[in-house]
Length: 279
Ligand SMILES: Nc1ncnc2c1ncn2[C@@H]1O[C@H](COP(=O)(O)OP(=O)(O)OP(=O)(O)O)[C@@H](O)[C@H]1O
Image 1 (tube, protein in one colour):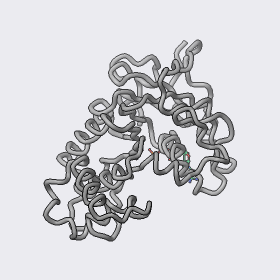
Image 2 (cartoon, protein in one colour):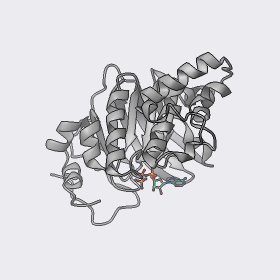
Image 3 (spheres, protein in one colour):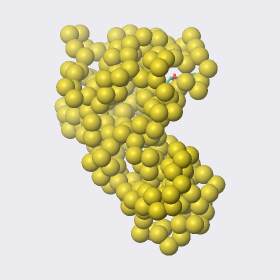
Image 4 (cartoon, helix red, strand yellow):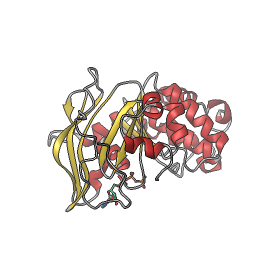
């Protein structure tokens, strides 16, 4: 019997996987592993039993309707949810390279060096282009101008921005277009050589041309980084993501390689969502 699409979003979701469905098989070489994770904001549960293996050096996209928990899952990975009073993982475990990132011994600053983040709205600092890209290295204590120069150039090249800004590195970052500012934020994120880059709707404020440049960049960045992105744009998930996870009311409904998820989803709920039967 297939799960019927609820007409309204229930407060407490019933099991939504089809009977007999097993959790996705563990990826042998997971960079990131969610093991049966429940998460609450105070007394309000936002995630139920999230079980997910994210492979290294691939792009993984999270899709699903508003409020289904995509950003919460993403923000678990750099412990940004710690900043919300009462927000916590209430059961289960989240591992990066096999290490539990919620242990009391975990250095959160160190974790955030390993797990960079790019936000929906570009957020350059009120500083020059050079100052923005070199920021992370400078606060880590790097003072050598040659090292900083090389890192800034490599990061701007890595973010496909060097040619557009190389002659104005000392000018304000606010003088860049929206798309350039977003690529600058990506350059700032990669300058400290993270292992994982989280992107929360990185193109939602951009026009189609700027979106296309950032999408090309995302595809290139996976050669070096593990990318996890939230997107409301299903075409973007199709274009950029190797694997896609579909969430609904705080549960992971389906996680598969992107082509399979879009062309032959195992769950009726996934099919209904990608066919636009609800949003
Ligand atoms: N700071 C917070 N305090 C309390 N509840 C929160 C907080 N942030 C998110 N939530 C709740 O947790 C649930 C999941 O929210 P989340 O932002 O993760 O969903 P989402 O799928 O990313 O949504 P959207 O696509 O609209 O960004 C929602 O019910 C939301 O109201």
